[in-house]
Image (cartoon, rainbow, N blue to C red; front, side, top):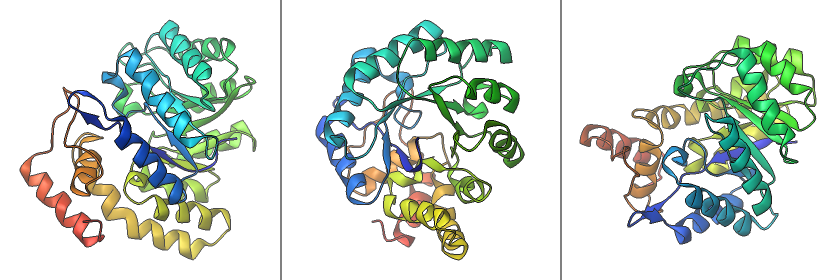
Length: 290
């Protein structure tokens, strides 16, 4: 259901509030450059620091700006099941096309707890749900056997996989069947994941070069191995620098340098060090982005 090059879009701020005009401009930039879907309120969107009103505002802006041209897969995860239900139901009411739910962070549930968490949310919404596994941020890894159990739930349609393990990705693809979308959650592994049967990516790098990310997916889908491989290596240095500090610090700093957003982060995130800013500037110049 959810396939292609999706962007884990940043949340621009101005004077401590969501910068709605800048967010709309970013979304239009993505639509013009081939992005297949918008993912607001994810990790890259600083969702952990958005209050519920801001969370709704960001999703509403995305839905209203996209106007059905491309889907909106809204981040609605929480480490409290009741809150994940509430956020998902709100996203459905606003008009999102689907919900992206991260594994509960900090409280480190068991595999059974993960199954109960996601299956409970799924029962309380009609939205298609994409699971999100990112152990480096949550301290818990959702195992392939748990994903396989969840894949038979009617409206759980895919997973954003950011475990860093191609073996784990392969096991999920093998056990969940062809209708279940396994989506890359790590830019440096997008091409390898597409090569073994993944159906797309939710990308940080796409914030800067949506056209290149879209072409990588299109080449992979068409079986054009040489083009996909070439774009993978072309983007490798850019993707690498975007994780020189905690995401989304570098990508927001890059968008500031590109003149697309204000230089504002939501505490406890802060601007990058001067050393990393110089490195980022050099890479952006090498890619002709500034």
